[in-house]
Length: 184
Image (cartoon, rainbow, N blue to C red):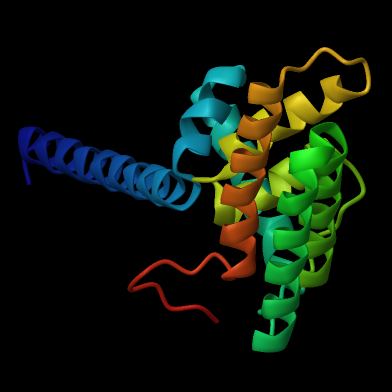
């Protein structure tokens, strides 16, 4: 074989290997975008680099895979739905307290589903794997809830926080199911 043919074969092999690597990275990126939804872009924007952000998201997936999450039985879901209705009724007379109750109810529901609840930042990371599409609601509600003690919230903001808590609450209550999605 001539040197030219050997070089051509080596170049083709290198190009094929490079193409395979690029395709694999694109597949991983697509998987992360689909799994995390808007949380993917948020993490990339907040990170030092796309690679570091994707590493962080994969670490979240690994931690999440180690959690013993469980679906809730129908009777438990019904009780939580009733608890939510009670919190909403309290909003009429005590909006600040109701927002705090909503936060506690969401945290209790997370815990019952099997999510660790040791701190807000870790809750956000753990929830991001399956609930990335409703996570911004949780952030917005939490931000309002943290300002309620100082009296820096309007009734409209408190009402908005209840709506935001409700979005995550519903997602957790239905076990995060979406039409056409199979759950293990």
